[in-house]
Length: 143
Image 1 (cartoon, rainbow, N blue to C red):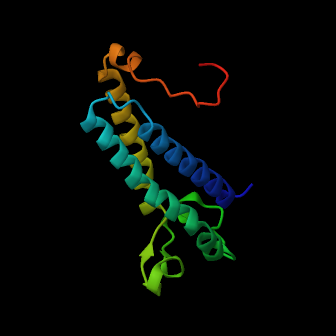
Image 2 (image 1 turned 90 degrees about the vertical axis):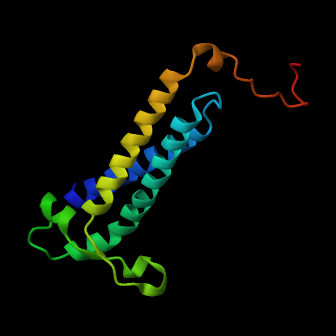
């Protein structure tokens, strides 16, 4: 597998982890400290934007690396400036290196997860156990 292949797989996995974490925190118990939960949601939501842009950059990165003698060099892969014009509305010419999207994505993901962990630790166990259970459907056999 090529360096670009590993980059694509890792970017896809990190994007899925970010979105799943965002959904997990959003569906978490409401009895958690609101400020920590809100900050965790904010960090994860902000982290999702560069995650999606990183995935959108993959075809542009593949095109930029075609025929390059250093195509297998990881440093070249992360520092190669790419034009975001084809994926932005109105065709704005914005040059960005993949590392400028990967770092904020990973940092936002880590901050969001750490804040959620702190909020979960700060929540009293009684409050988590007293969280309301999901209501059963009226058609269920068990009432």
